[in-house]
Length: 436
Image 1 (tube, one colour):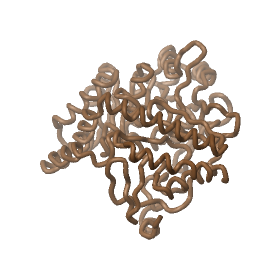
Image 2: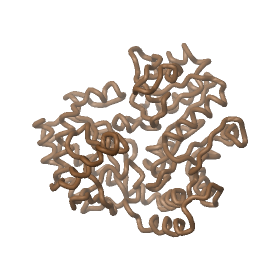
Image 3: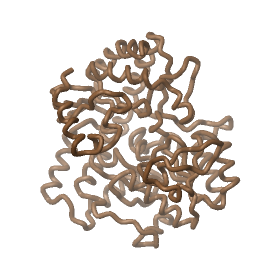
Image 4: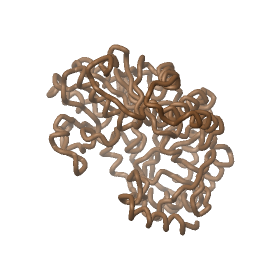
């Protein structure tokens, strides 16, 4: 494929933007090569500046549930934009979007913000303000945005106080962050045994997708890991926070909550609820949310929160995201998982495919590995095989997430033609992985 214009733009971008991109994974550092600069998108397809067309399995990292440039979403945005793009005052659209989220989830009230990072940052402050405690418990490999206290790496041991995971994040900031391996109940129990009266909250991705998709495990007693976390947190007076920025309104009408029925104390949302525009939210019971200013003492604010263009895009997307839409995406995802597994098996490439609803990812594992329950296991996969697989798919017009540690996303517009193109590209990509 021709990449001249993308190469030129990337060279120019690196002179004026750190690393040439405005979010690190876009730089293709994990896979090598030249990032594609996208000119436009429609339905299941991306079109780059060199005129190449790709079947898109990133979907803007989740928001484009209905496909790119959905005509009804564009029409709604156009109607609002001509009336003004920001008012700094309340609008009816904010109320309608909040009501739609409340209708789909167990929360009673939500506060709209502009990004998933802002949502998690704010919900942690709220949890600390409510409980009067300082410590938080998170899981290795779960990403909750670039909040200082959450950009930490797990040390040795089942449950350990964290060290900074990025320059610029101080040890003082992360002193109160405890990190456990995901799905490790013993580590969580040990953390609460030692720090239980100081832990304000447990925060987890509802079904992690930032270390590859790793669903919450079901224990021998039939209890889902999320249910275990909720029960354990509440037994120690802490709050259970489910981060559904990625899974919310993506894996079902009600997100991961719609799949496992575990009711958190507080939740965060993003991506799909913005319909491709910067929008996110956090919510909970009216009692807990009542601690937020101006009703309560915990302060949080945002000049562009509830922006009318973003809210109408999100509201229109959610109203169009019917049960039929989810059923269609689920069926497409199930079929694609089978096709990927068949191609890799035929090429004798060891792998594990895991999913939560229609969200899935492929781990290039050692032979004999049958599941990936945590970040420690995910890090053992063969990223060189994914790199070869990625570029073989890209060369054949299929745009995968440029990292072995990311989820694959589908939309309602991934039709038979798009699926056929993906399936036809798989054998060569599988052989490339086998040769890596």
